[in-house]
Image (cartoon, rainbow, N blue to C red; front, top):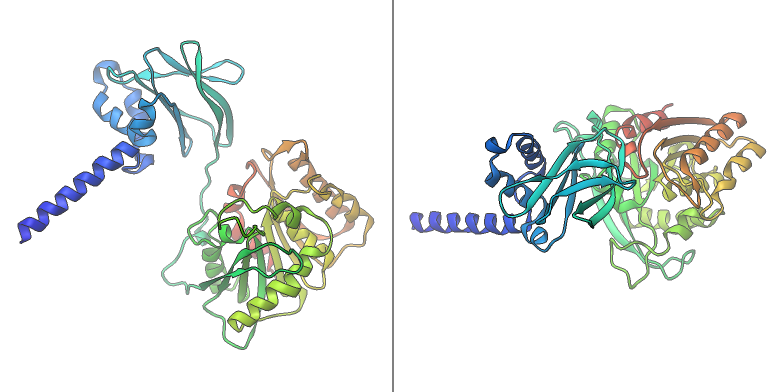
Amino acid sequence: MKQTFLLLAWLLSTSVGWAQERSGKTGDPREAVKRLQAGLASTAEHMDSAALERDVYRLFGREKLQQGKAGVRVEGTTAVWGIIHREPARVVRANGTLVGEMIPIGQTGLQALAMELPNMTELNYRIEAGSVTHVAGVLRVETVEYPAESNAKPDTPKGRLEKFLFENSQVFPGTLRTVTVYVPAQYQAGQEAALMVWQDGTRHADPVGSLRVPVVLDNLIHSGAMPVTIGVFIDPGRSPKQKEGDKAFNRSKEYDSLGPDYARFLLEEILPEVEKRYALKFRTDPASRAIAGGSSGGICAFTAAWERPDQFGKVLSWVGSFVDLRGGHVYPSLVRLSEPKPVRVYLMDGTNDLDNAAGNWPLANRQMEAALNYSGWDYRMDWTECFHGSKGMITRLPEALRWLWRP
């Protein structure tokens, strides 16, 4: 019986490994990239072609390459390109200058190139073989280190996550959305707690997602850097025909629009529903209520506090879209022409952020920074080299929350 079990286990592991190699999903891709980079740097007579073939197929998939498709992958600060073609292939920039000649592996036409690139690099590339372009695109090298507070610690109490579907909005009719609620381990029933609302909720409520917000909250609440704070993570509205995870059709309307609608949606619909559903109580003083988001979610957070400073006294915005998507470019002027509001604002942006027809994100955030400074707001602006997205916020989130929730 034992021998039969061992035989079945061996057959299962062998078949799984074979299937993974065919699909390109076996092994740690970071290790495959390291081996490939070292192997391609060796001389032809010392090259282990069989091992390099396996790593290229693991990264890109054997069938995909055999169908004539080229691939690119970035792991850390290493970019790898692969192709099967009978003619020598090369990687070139969009302007035609050479990035590197691809190196043949074995006798099947398989070729690859692995290169270290500077961090915070954006490269417009194409793979050419003969006179034909087989793939073109843009790759970004943007690698960051997680701070200590972004890692789960065995001695830190962990909050729980609850989730529900909200589908009866009167402010944004015809929408439904997932709402995730973080309840810290230290919360005691019947007591009031601080509140922090997060836009694009599902993404940020994931303990193993890019920002690991619940892990950061666990650690900061446990250390006393934050009060006992309930997190309400709200997705933008999607239509009933859309599945969870689809690009929400109502996101721009909700997030980029100026005016009181989103704050009213929170105060009249979402927050009362969360309190009732989970028997929670939020503190009512604005200094105990924060709102956060990135990109369009960042300007949305500012708009909610701008409209209702009596309800939201803290704003966390990264790569905020203070540009002309739906009129948000006017905020620097509005801030300059108004008395400072009793709102604490943390902004973060990167010098590699977007520049398109709606505006220049770094310039727009510079304008916000200058306007808040001119008008005497309680604010902080941190600059990085990040691109548009949440990676720049990864390294700064614990410090941003400590600053935002300081006494």
